[in-house]
Length: 168
Image 1: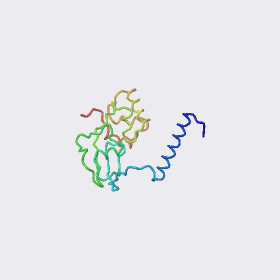
Image 2: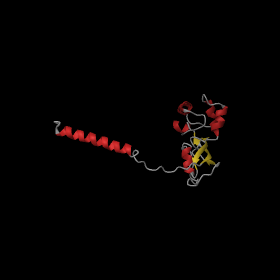
Image 3: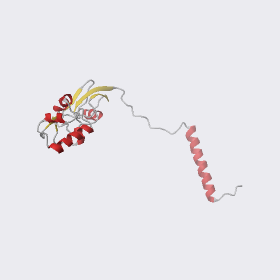
Image 4: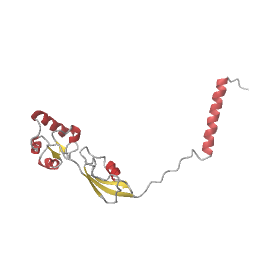
């Protein structure tokens, strides 16, 4: 009837097969889906403070562990000390968790580490590093106030989180 080459017949058969499969899927209600795993609609509110990137109240599924709460809070900061914590214990609604942190050595801290201090962004962190390069190591923490942008209020916020010596 039609003078089709072998390749044209193959393409025509393929197109017809695709059409029939599509029609079959449509008539049977679509592609079958795996049932969704039920997700707990119950959640708890937990306050996570201390050496985490995003301290404050966080909403977590009921039954979450301390480690999951730390992840929800953006993760632990480099100076976080998790050694004494039971990271596998379950969190309770309205629980408050404190993530202890070692003090940051202001004479050794990198630019990134300095930005974890409250109120210290990349610009101030760079100024701290430049001060160290020009004048040497800080001899007292109050020398931080000599850096443009660090006044008394900002100094009070970072004073308790910084040190001049390494902590072990």
